[in-house]
Amino acid sequence: MSLHETSTWYSHRVKREVRLSRWGHFGVPVLVFPTAGGDSEEIERWQMIRAMAPLLGAGRVKIYSCDSVAGQAWFAQEGDLGHRMWVMNQFQQYVRHEVVPAIYADCRTDTLPIWTAGASIGALHAVAMVCRFPDVFHRALGMSGTYDILRFAGADRFTLDYFVSTPLRFVPELNEEDPRLALLRQRFVLLASGEGRAEAIQESWNMAKVLGERRVPNWVDSWGPSWHHDWETWREMLPKYLAEWTSQ
Image (cartoon, rainbow, N blue to C red):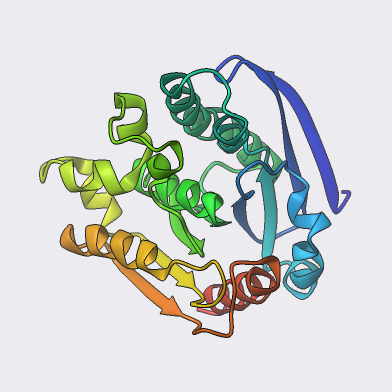
């Protein structure tokens, strides 16, 4: 089996061609979401795969990444704001109903829990997938996360598509009797952030507050002012936490 493969198909959910890349041969499947407008191989170009080589070589993790369809639409200002919010929801539905089955097929099982990770806007989707679909996704690592991107549009109104895609919005409204909430309380969200250039750790604290109020296990880990909103930071964070998680 090749250690690196990329699959391409047309998704009717997001109405475009999409790609899913995979690195590794064995281990816990980890879906890494790209930054804002990144594609499925962004993490390789930015040396994240090289940083995780020991974990990949030891068969502790298999890394997957998909095109950031929602981020590309949002920051290219595709259509009007309502359309971009629709794409955001459809993107997460595509991940759940197309990417997840592809990961299961690659792993030859549909019983493995999937972990998620992402930096910047990718952190939003990493956390959202665990909160929306805790039956499938068991852990999330949000690095230098931005968890409410409405401010980038200079707007204060949002659609149902945006609401259901943004855990800062929908987690507080989960019904106490919702089985999803009971499952979510068995999951874990780690929110890591530097406090250096272009970082906004308050975003992580805001997300943690929402999760904590619903008794969802989470942890904010500050790396301090020497760590900036950049790939150098994330190349250190991702292998560190994955090494810890796979040692438990």
